[in-house]
Image (cartoon, rainbow over all chains, first blue to last red; front, side, top):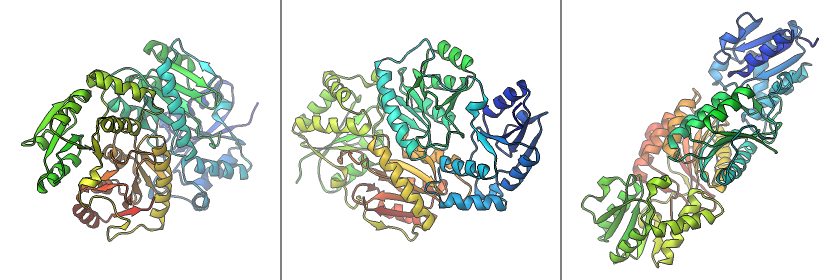
Length: 272
Length: 272
């Protein structure tokens, strides 16, 4: 039996999914819930501790006390303002390291966080290792497939997403008939798609491309899509969604595929 | 006395400013007003023709009939859906050229348009040639100047804006304390700033960087700021605005500088 899993729970559906899977297999978990980030419902009846994001010392000592050796960073966390962060000594030290780092994008910060946990002898595991059947496969998952125009949109979307990812700006891009409708920064993919529903063309068409940042720490914040992503993409009039084989997560693949088939979208995993 | 000026009038304040300046100097103008784009107020009492964007043949023959040799493309134009474009034969030919072009971003299309007008012996002039005192100078225009943290944000903003511009995605980026808050695609700078007012940090700080796309046709859609841009930037809590010396337009510089000084923002023109 693997040791107790420490879950640093960000927002979105990922933490709940990890908790379910662990409990189903009989593995114990301990949840670090972040104020204003973690969905309170997920830790009902589950051993947990609520902390402000800046209480790094408290987090580490509690995970040790609970006997967690494996730790997972699950779900995105919005970076709070300094005044809301309420950093302890340990967090202040980390902030110093972050300030010294070349970039201050999400990926740079997550890498520093992972390094800090490892220096305390935690074993940081990726969400994809804990969940079954969550990593995107290669090829078409749906009945629908890209047509020639979609393929051009995909090509442009991949180029833009790579450039943005390299600069640690964001993971997602929406392209419709050769036009970049929108580009994701910190607002997230949901907000991007909502906005594109307003700037969209009248005709059906276009794609959402969501890729891992090239240099991204693989164990934190892998590009993720779910059934909601499919529904929002459909509201923009898009023909499909492109993710990267082996480098992105599909939550509830059955539901994602069913929803995409129902709405007439393709979902494909491309090779990096 | 220069010949009659043909004004292809997009949205925003630029066309009105060009009309005013010409009339003040006694130069005749003829305005091509695009349905759903041009502000109807600007052509009151001015010789003009309303056309759908797709009536390229009509536009060219009317400009010839009016005896316009100089033509200016003033103000941004949203690309309509094909069904709203109502293209004539000439427009269909142009759309073919656009489809063959490497990219289909705004810059690619504007370059093809400029080429088409030149093939008809029009002389396409930039808005900056027609307006006095509109081209951004180098250096600080305001009392306020960037501090060390702003300089880091500027550096990151310039890198991201260049990458986006190279891909013909957009001109503007908002960076706050090392975090890219938002990136402009087709929604425009106003919409970008509105959105960033929601995702902003609580503390004051950050910059709007707006640069010409590196390969951009200089005679169309140069990056433009006005007093509204300053007010919106202030609502995001930004410390200032960065544009490019010689490559961007400041409308009503006096008002822009006064408003920036009043709100505590810097406006600087950097060297490319």
